[in-house]
Image (cartoon, rainbow, N blue to C red):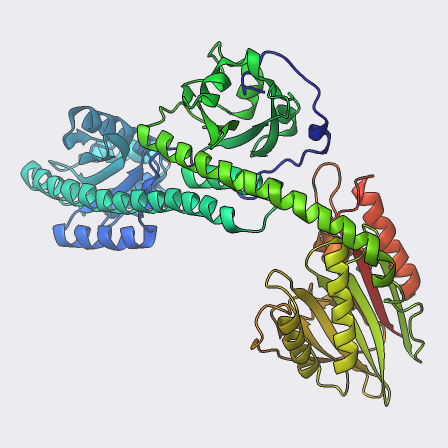
Length: 615
């Protein structure tokens, strides 16, 4: 879609499209100067305000652009506290401050005003780059004594005890206008200087993020990543570095007619289903493909954008379209969207163009990489598929008095990257192992087989940390830098009814005891990363009725058609609900629940479950 194309086309790739959105969307609008509380920690701001109030001997309060308090009032008198209420959230006080701030903002100078309660105050606006950020309010002192009738009227209006408010009014000091005027000018200069310095730091951090995005794109040139990973990284990186709403990346098809949507970030499936862009009908993309970047101030009303209703529902306003230019010519476009009207600066456009130019090289490299990897993968799987997976998993679970043990593994493809095993160590001890290797297909299967052989060779005694450490050293010596293994290795001692274990970065198995749960986490980092990594072991006593559930992330990370994940909380709740079942029935029930939850979505990862129940 145009991004502004005038026609809707079928595009098979969209049927498998993965909607990518941030997990934590910040309410901050794109390209907006941040709030005062985001520039300076509120506790630090409070300390500075308290110091200034004590030094000047006068009440001070800082409110945000909407008039709500950022800080707690300093040196506030009892009379004002009674009227303003808890948190100084009295609506009349807030409206009074906003009106005064509006005058101060328009005049550019601190302004004196009398609040609804008859107290004289001064308000000065806090500005950064001519943008109103908030108000510093000081005073809460009358120019002459408050009359009894006036105080009683206020007491009735705000339902305050008359005597209490009258006593508080008697304590209110009268300040001269000259004193308060000089004080507010000092505080006005102090506040604006302080926040301007903080904003400069904020702007510097943002510039660092932008340069980081450029550096990250450069890093992708030398990384062994596939095309989709490269595109997704670029799209996400641009959104986060530039604080924009969303990004799309389109690549030219083989016939040089369509710009197919290959990656997006923070756009819904409704937007993505609009299909590819026909280049002949899209003047904005035509200009971008010629190396001329184009902006649209408001896509919801600009006639060059063909889907204003969809744009409005997505919360899109301004757009920047930049061509992805390779040495041989343009290969695609990048579209950036903000969620408010924004004029892209020359620096911003230049930065995006630089990232897009580097992205062109990364995309070409990723395509060549994918082609070579695909060829190798097919050759290896045809040659080794039969050997890798044969006889790797136990055909039956061990039978031990007072214990009920069962396991289940369901690969997502022909070759599995999950591993589980039971190793008889003699003298009433049994090793239980579960692992998950990085990667899929033949490479993952090979690494899985290698890990199993090493563990079997090293397994002895009850010191689980030594076994894991030896396995890690062997994997570090024999595997590539990009390969690693998460593993949970444990030893069940039947005589002492204890489970000794070391967790090497694996999903922690869960010990269920009545309504309580315990995660078996002690250990260290995944295997195959650092040869000198240190590993700890832990031990837990098992009691009658306990259930220990071992699993791989293919269980908890199963997704349904709504892109919801199965999750750990759901798994725990199911085990607690069906804890009366034997191990085999429990595992089958959990697997059925996972499949039902996926709602027909293809299995994306291997599923492995082991249940150990103390009878």
